[in-house]
Image 1 (cartoon, rainbow, N blue to C red):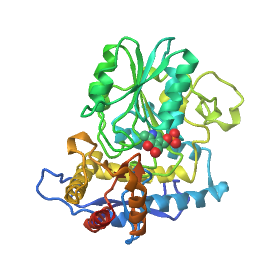
Image 2: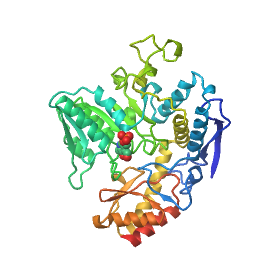
Image 3: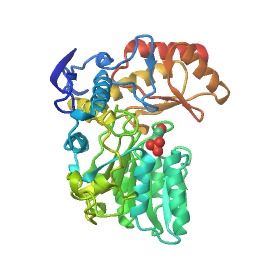
Image 4: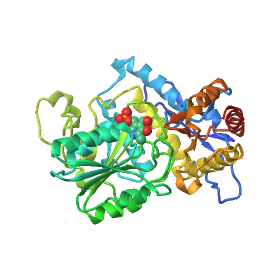
Length: 415
Ligand SMILES: Cc1ncc(COP(=O)(O)O)c(C=O)c1O
């Protein structure tokens, strides 16, 4: 059952009558181990998702939480009345968001920069890791293009090379990467799960392997942050970047870059006024300074004060904090277990739970049937993605048993 946890003013403080209900599910502290578990789809009412849609496409973009949509509408209304916006408002929600994200990641607010995209965060990482001619930058084979292109450009600039880790049959990504790390490795740029099929990468093992040769670790967590715990202390990454619109349930254009303390005095990729020390004093902006705002704020994107989007991102992160990432992860694991069991019964190959993240997985389809299967699913109101020859299934806490039945019965008739 969904119970309102607390009601608070719109994040654009004090200027709107809109109220945002942040909800918590009764029993979310009960995990898979407790014996009592909320039924699948218990949180569906929190999402703006019609009954006839069975949505398994969070890895593409999440459906929107009602609280996030409400915050966006209130934010746009607030922007429509600029005479009510004070100088302080340019900073207050941005800092609120930064500290909420820090809470979610178990980091300090100073370690978080607000970035519009993964590629922006990766560009900051590429600008700040030392690269020498002959160095290797390791990525996974079939890596997401933003990660591949960023590093191939950085390699070109430094006369270094991108090395793609390819898995042998039956091999894990972790072993494929560890097998290629040597003294030439300068950067290991990996996700926590492969974006095409959720196959898992052990970041702690890779962090240890990279540290042994003094290589930097850069994590694209766009397909995992919000749905999988990430132990920053255990991995010790140099940078972690994530979009906000997938597993973090927020809007487009508000993403997050975690920056390890050792890189917080580095070079930003743009030189925006608001990132400089004293920017709060609008009357003295032309007293130019070489000093920056503290910590990772120097890497924030210009115009980060987006009065429409930032309140949405706060509402989304607040909901995840209220649920807690371990709870979300446990519950998605239960959903994915149920999905795999029923899909295997149709005769399709599903991965072992240990081979994939708790929240998403790929089902290999006969390649000549993949397009037709996707069409049949679409006709039945079942939304998923095809990546390569793999049907990528990525549910969330809105997923009900009826959604699973609809996906599985359509697959049964379509393959
Ligand atoms: C692994 C991964 N990284 C990044 C992105 C998005 O990249 P960008 O923010 O550069 O558009 C996606 C989108 O699907 C993704 O799956």
